[in-house]
Image (tube, rainbow, N blue to C red; front, side, top):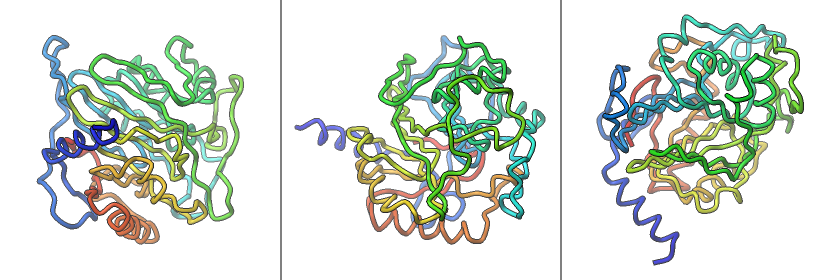
Length: 325
């Protein structure tokens, strides 16, 4: 059969055994949660191919445990108050890394995947990389910001989209993407860093710096696509066909046909997980705090996904629950 049909057949067959839970605001039939505590990982000799769990850390942040390896995506745990949700928004908010929140949750990391360098995606990354020795993958802006924080160049990998990185029991494909736009058709804190700047001090010192997506393929396990912002370069998605898509919620309608283009480009994943829907300046505690306007947007997003891709299951995640796909 053609390649695309074979991928869809294998993906659909695997999805019938997916173990997922519908937390938060999701409705309809769902499997019970497969929650697991954060425990010590097995020794490398005991690694199990395909043993993988996904824990949401709010915003677009994830901890992915694959056997004895941990991959982090946009790990933002400090959740500092900028006034974004309560007003007025203070663009000069100091970057205050909350080690008391990070340390109990980040015991290890092999890699950190950065979709873009806004504060709610990047500000905790340098501390986490220094603490764990993880290699940081991101745009050239992420590379230069890492240097500004004192990370060695040997721990930083600049990527731009198209790379397929092989880690043995999993691969990561880098996908060129786009950042969402606000009601004025603008991107907050636009710009890139083409050389190391002074060490950032405020949230305005962390620009968008271009945006990436990442496709994680686990050997013997699921393929999962991670977004960090709600826009899409759908031509870059051809052939990815993930089992699961972590999809950032729109906060404006200035990006036309966002969900139809994204879901079609990803070949209508079996599971769609809304992210970046929470108030990420509140404590990381369930149920997630959702601003009233964002709750409306989330409900509209769920309805739209079900209309556009009726075969997809919508999973609205809760914090730090281990999901198994």
